Image 1: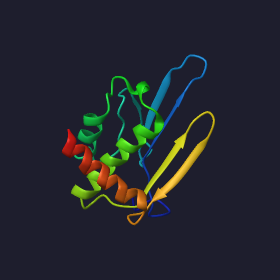
Image 2: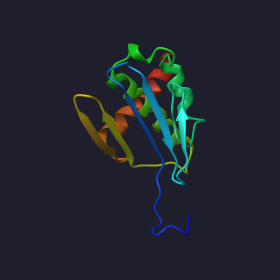
Image 3: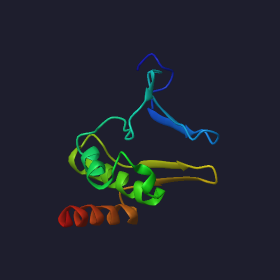
Image 4: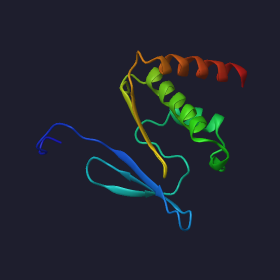
Length: 130
């Protein structure tokens, strides 16, 4: 938006779990300031044609509690890698932050990151075996 004082913008997903009742609340916050409540298990901003099918193929979205964080992150990042591969408008770096009651982890993956090469291998391996 040219009327903003800087040329940068971001959309993000904000969520959390109330430790007293276990209810999870998720919100999509768009760069124009619009906030929407999310009721789906799968939340993605922007491109959904290439990443979402990968996620739905390898995770049961109606029962995400059965997976550990590492497994979910691996599959979500495979979906992101698939999106990057098929859509030239999407690219690296990929910023990721995992926030839990006990720890916070942040990392930035660039295209030459060893984990990205492993993601490509996992994606092709899982597609071949399914």
